[in-house]
Image (cartoon, rainbow, N blue to C red; front, side, top):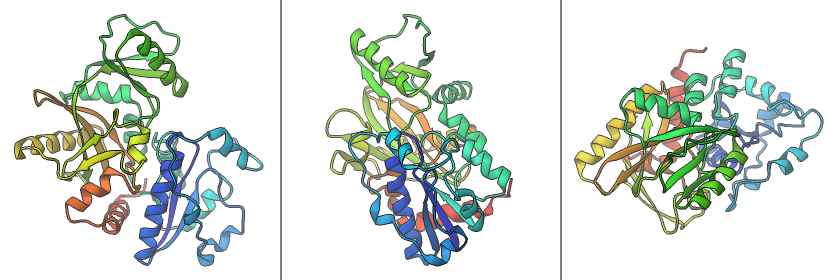
Length: 344
């Protein structure tokens, strides 16, 4: 099958996306697919009509994730000519040649529904959920409102726009996060008024709106959902600090246990909540839900990830492996689900 693995882009999660893209691309090649790894923003400068026949492979040049998110201004400086469009040279042309586009994008424009809506209009098939659910999940404030409306346990919180004065009712410690960020970029835990002000400043650097929510002290988990059915629960225990950008992507920074060491009833309860979230947020294909559990055993769903990471340290592939599914099998399953969807 001719497959474009679309990665890169201009979000703070660019490096993570390229790492996911490399892993997916190599898995598809091992399975005999005619795949191409394509940077959605930088595009392709050569003769695009025969790109699949030329079997271009630049995957070995990407995949390293630093301890900090990349400088997007430097990336934008690499592109020649017209730079206002999110789509680089010949990206749409090449995607139209493919039978399927495997989305390995993370963060802004890759996960917020804009790209999915564009592909729907262009008749391009892609993996993952649609534009509506992508938009709902990308905005953490909207997600929390839907959780509350459907009685899904989540930490209490409020939204705050840049320039707005908060109500003064925020209790410390609290978590401050950019409303539409990912990979824990722009996320801080504040224990003092000084840390709270600094956390807001950092979050507002990434977004015009932030979510401020109660800090839940306890254990952290994640549950992948594939075609509506939950995978085994995974527990995440960073060796230092919380599960931030560095701890997510630097090997050896976090202890991950899958299946999580939980009583069967608690595991089943968390999986059921994850499946309900999948339904409430109108998700399709696959997703991953993040949870905290406090010392009393109460569970809180934090958010849903519509294009979960597929890097060497990512959680979804580990959960799939615990269910007996190899990385290659997982990629094939994601494509199989996408091909079953009716074109928009």
